[in-house]
Length: 443
Image (cartoon, helix red, strand yellow):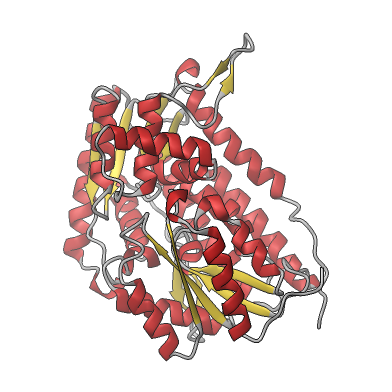
């Protein structure tokens, strides 16, 4: 059995710093004369960037995931939402977010100049959201009501397979974006800067393409990154994919991962089995990924970690690779209209948007990953916390098995630890590893 060299990522602390600054900047925006907006991780964040460099977002899904890791706070938030009458079978991120508002408790407290710890929930100046799944628009409608009536704007997105993206779909979204910019100016009393919009669109294209490139290096054996680590890296794109800080960091990370491949540096030194997961993990129980390593097994990623933020295209050799950016094609964005069209077309080609209501297309993507990333099996999370990304998961299982890949399923919830049975899941992993011919390695 091979034992590969391993080492910690050199840029790991920088990733942590970016994330910490993000939540701190949002909380302190008002005292610095800036603006705060709240919306989803898939919202068109490049557009509010045109209001100025002192405009800070809080994206709901990664905020909910951050709290989900803290079992005590997550439970308090969800019980607060349930006490208000919101059903337990709704999106768990959404219930956590609402509960955080209801409890008036911010997950990332700050210390002011007087040494006082401030942990009250920072109220946004406006909501900026797009609507893809059944929860998105309602999420921020309720949040607005809980906050006492925060101005809200939501863009309806006509998602679907890339070959069904027509001019009508693009025009429908761009028209809403144009109206949204007028709404932003009226709501914030600020003049809009098209140059900042263009820069943000270019940064988003660069960041999301480079993240996909980073994921391609996990096709290598041994894989330079494991999925648990990737969760802490892809999240920066869910926070502010349009920001230069994230785009620059991803290029730095890309270069380091490329070097790890060149030097044979492994995420799991005793790698002998490769799997992938699917959809969001049970955030309070990420130990399941470390448990896999006891068998010499690594999860190299998933359609979720690859495609939630990453942008992909089929390359000339038929494999999946990073999508070519407008900049790489020599396209210079010069006008607001052009920037909005590029932003729309770019996002409509996102894998997680294309398959959102097409289990068959999702299966095709997952089988592609299983083949190109040289997998031995697949672990599917029957995630009760997200109906959207779990849609058709049973059909995905059958398609993967038909393609020749062993599949293990486990039930849980990305944000509600009350719906995850740790003992049962670990037992299922033991059985799955046995079917793959693996026994636990000696300690």
